[in-house]
Amino acid sequence: TNQGIFVMEVDGNTKELSRVASTTDDDSFDDFIFWHYSGAPPCAGGLEEEDDREPLRMRSSPFVAVGGNLPNVMFKASTGPVDGIYIGKDPKKLARLVDTTMKGTDFDKDAVIPESIDMGGTSVEFTNAGESLTIDEVAIEREGARGDETLHITLALGFTGTGTYDLDGVVVESDVDFAGIYYKIM
Image (cartoon, rainbow, N blue to C red):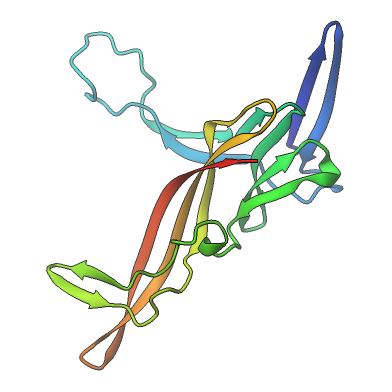
């Protein structure tokens, strides 16, 4: 299927539609549609007789935001197994903000294996403390691009890695992960 990200600029009576990115042969993107789990779970939030909230379920949608005085378009796209957040207006001049091939420390200096963690009351010291975690999830906040002269963006990122520690002469691996909401002015 062909998918694309388009911008319609309206100036008085003039309208101009332009392609920012697509899944056609001349662009390098494979997909702009992602699955997410959203909605209100049953019985959540009160005892109202009529609950008009959307039910909890899997939904598919693109992640796109527009902002700035150009305007800039920010979107999530996949290229094979790599998901990324891209920004720009011209298909030939898109910039990659972040993707799942990047080290966590490329975006957040604190996205590293910690020195130690508490495991049921016992402190475990990691032998690979300070190693960068990997960015494994990227998302755009729904209203993630704002501003006129400067662009204010909001991203959600997930990081993961494997910490190692010694347990009586045996090297043990433990998953380490965290997520955050990041705000950046461009």
